[in-house]
Length: 502
Image (cartoon, rainbow, N blue to C red):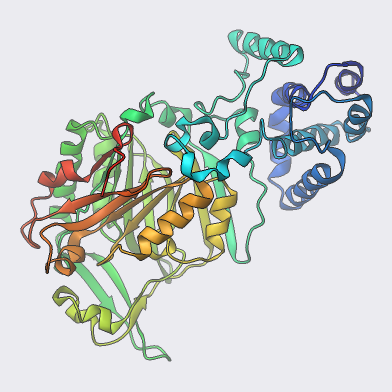
């Protein structure tokens, strides 16, 4: 048994005025310097499965039942906790045991849990995203002698070039233990799904405004006519339905130039994040966006969700959204989880969809493997659901709830966002406090809304704790859209969110 193990157990047993948060801090201090040896073990599927089971066992049988993390622990409680750490000749096993107990405490007690009981208090949540400590699931730091000592040691280590820094504040998310304790979600993956979860590099996070209230998000329509889309139809299947694909745009170079002009205009208005709609950014446009960002042409834009396109990989087609960072680097990509079905009677209502009206159609895309990608960003824990993926009540919805996602980006191409998209946004927000950003193409929505209204409701944002949503309107007739002039109406500024949106 190592000296470190001895010291750790003795600290648990000898200190009289110790609470669970002190134990958490002590384990944190022990695990932080050696986390680089713990993390690879968790990458092994079998080890991770046992790790989750051990965490759940500790939560159910070993941890004191009190929900108050500041309540003093008696000797019996401390002996029980110490007994869960059983050093043997394998130091690496002991290190993993320490991290297992650390994660069990992290997921159990209100003062440091990643899912506070207060999160269910939906109507009274006062702020957006992770600016509020409860929404952010920030570890509440209460003063205690042991915690203060740990904090001093961590800060001192950081000041001398060490890897340690202050305990989590919900602002900085990096590659240190404090982030993986926070980020490591105990999830049960539904059959057929995989989960890809991580944070963004510091070089990306630090580019965002310090005050997220000044963050501007553009839900920009981009494609205003379906005639600009190249469509491919396949043979009827056994159910008399026809698969289809949007294989590109008829004027890719023109759309690419138009897209760069849009980004230029948005950058002049200090927009931070741009979200383009579904099926509007094929590879040629995507390359142009990446190159322009790499050249530093748009100083204020820190993230572009280029969403999405039908693309072929091998023998399969996918509907894929791409996310680019401030230097044009690919941050992640998300594939659509469920093909969209377009019924013939829906297509018959729109003249621009006449070529879709002969049969019931569906996207001829593959959904295997179904990978849910989640990233911790300065805007919150973010995931992308492409169009109808938001509407379905499949297992991926619960997976995102359990992962603590609080920012859902929804690129879509739909003739109507009401009522299904609104209902889905509200349901998701009630469970997870997620902000929903729906960026729709105006190619069909304006035609569908042409009768009885002067302004089409193209896109919208839904923010938890507010009574309504923020619509992005457009009153320009189809085919007459000088896109850059749309900029102002399609920009959401988080810090000035009014209470009286219609």
